[in-house]
Image (cartoon, rainbow, N blue to C red; front, side, top):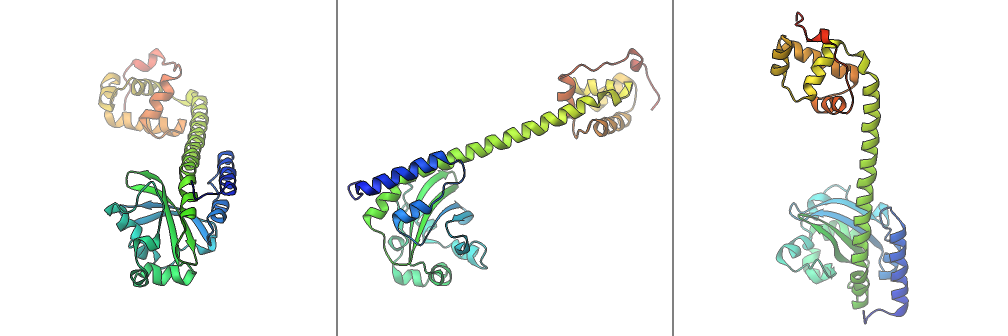
Length: 270
């Protein structure tokens, strides 16, 4: 904090407000300008498999994920080795040039074939989320070597707030997905309920037995028909109601009242 000026802190506070007010993926343009870099990005990674799972970068044309050979090269990123050896702390930022000297970097295909041609000389990394084998890392690419203590302090100050914004976005996305699924299920249940009168008396009886948890053999025994006939009845029930399995049929039947005529209790030929 001692390395940050009052202006730095005001700009950092503005970014936190921006992230808290926006339910989309947090933009890193402001943070990239505050740090002073050419590109900034949020990288999803699997540190066990040593691969990237997602890349969101301020300049999409600089996204290397689709370049031939990049996926194989990134598996040798020094950050993966540093994390496994404990040199990459999940609570503080680290520069690529902290992890490898310049001579070693120039021998690294990732650096020589991808980073340098794109103008990236150094990279600052900070883990913002870590969940088992997966994590999210914020990265800042720069066309000149080294990052100052002030640059690192900015990133370390804002990393927890960025993590909070990512978690909130994920929870919101999960909530939206659950709401959409619930709507689809409700609409399907309404359609299925409206089609219940289309069932024959025998099909209604089979459906009620399914809702009671009976197996095909138990239903066949109770109705004096063969298990194969029970299966055929179920196929017709699913087709008429627009369902696909016993569980959805059981939920529908148990949530409503299905009239089963007494005549359907008597044995019928297969």
